[in-house]
Length: 380
Image (cartoon, rainbow, N blue to C red; front, side):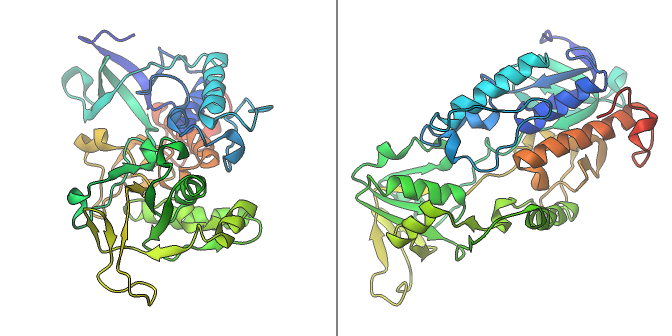
């Protein structure tokens, strides 16, 4: 471990040990780099599992959509009835040990700055276990640590409970209560379908009319969805989620919930009152403009956790970090994986591999467009 009073030099620092960070670490090891000498992996979580370890207990592995195995080791034979946090946490733990990735945890990264003096030309990564001076940085911090809470008039007056998906405890906590679920993504519908069985009443509120997707979602549709998010990142805009452009899958559980009226959507309310939420105009042609609620559950998504990169001034006027492939346009030493178009398990795997290819070229002093084979010790 790094002594808190020293600056340790290394070639690559990987921040985050979720899907994207572990994929990148795996490929760094494959090209001949040694953990804790040539690269170091830092993770703020208390144990392996990335953001999965914080998911609610009722999200069993069988309910997880599109979980792709990490490179080099398949996830097989998992019990679909076990919590996804338990299954994927154990899988990540085994993965780290099998490939000897030596993840440092829990370690918080507080800032990344341009080095000076002896560290000139390097990035200095300031952490709770000391500082690292690195030639390249792979940022894989995801979004879980930055839940997005919209602001609405009267929000501070609400006498009930407000919570976010990040703190969702499971349906039992809502027994006998009136619950407003805000958000049109997959988490919102999953919460509603669980809570409706125990709550006194549920209301689903979204800014836009939800789009339910019939039929299979194949590679062509996936590429088109990713391309929409990727274009935002290229323009330096804050990335939207891939899920936001794919629509909601219309499976049997969703069909049943729609038939039972659980997924009858209401337009976004205008304000929050001490006892519920209200619309300034009658909704859906009716006379009622307010519903009473004990809980408002914000299933409103997350934002990229990149505040520690602020000293590098990577953000564009549009609010995002402009990225080409995985490289930050404003500083080619910085790579973002699991960001924007790679914010999915399969996308994270691919981004981890692409980032390492680019880092190998950078460390060899080779232009970014040069072929990897010219300088890679082993195929990535």
